Image 1 (tube, one colour):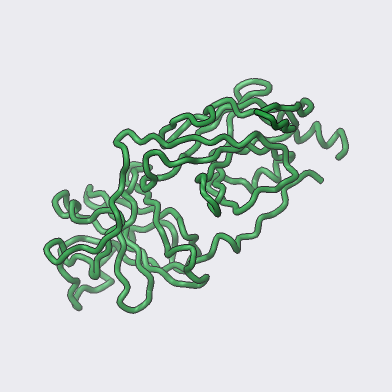
Image 2 (image 1 turned 90 degrees about the horizontal axis):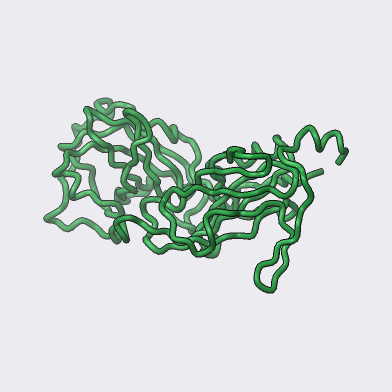
Length: 297
């Protein structure tokens, strides 16, 4: 790469250095300063580091389990000539207390290449030709310990009333903002929806196959004045590409919500609870998302 081009695109400039960790010596383009290995961290953690090679730092996180995806985090903010910080999300509301996660920082040489790592993007593998930090393993520490209930079907005593045939789709407002109708989703994807009459939504998902149950998704988190987001699951690793799913948001009162916990399955939507219009989406397998090479030319 020409020196003039390198100067034009580099955010930081110095030569890589050798890092020693145990018996292993690694050439690294960036040093991850915080969090420390095996540190117990909350759902949101501040990542800090020092760059040792030209380029743009990109923070990625994945669960410390085989086959898990790397997730790009928010773009780092420069705090000094060679230092940066960024906020990283460790797991989600369904992640168990004590779960382990890996954090790594890549050094992407160009601004164009950095665009491929936009926050929220996921990758099966990372490009091997980019300078990077040593991967740091951290442990999720939830304030309330282990959260989430095991998946089970509601008993007859807990079951909610069945929707009647007269319950017309036209009666239900469009309250789900993303994903949109007929868009593609991955196995784990975010659903964004509005509140209704001051009530917090509960998101449910089911496949369009006959007699499939509605599955209650992770509790919604508020991200705006009237906007909420839920981490939803669309099938599993064996679900075929092209499988169609339906999404709906319902708005129970506090008493009704106690019988609708994440991971539960119900055969019918409750007839006496307000709900959104349904949105139908298509499953796209993460393994089929092409990973573009963003290495330096």
